[in-house]
Length: 133
Image (cartoon, rainbow, N blue to C red):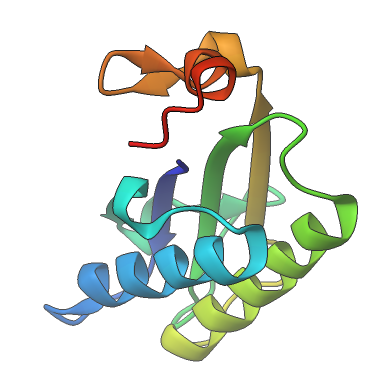
């Protein structure tokens, strides 16, 4: 059950860009982190590169940047799996958007199982009861 929030600074994203980002990030959450695709929520937002700054400098012409944040249940993934996810997300975003700035971020947040859930049930409840839906 991951929740992903994505902000992308790029000029003229294609009309299918949000769907492509949601698809690839969901696939990586499944393959790298073992998450359920059916419970993955992805919020993709585009922003004007003129409003994106790195080191207090506006993005260069034709440059893109991004922040991908993913909330996952604490203690469900290894350091190696998280590192792989960071690498794979960066590579996927760099393949999709032009001239991605090195200073683009992937952030994994480990949220305690009793502090979040979906469908009205916490992840702690799902763990204790064996409920998987």
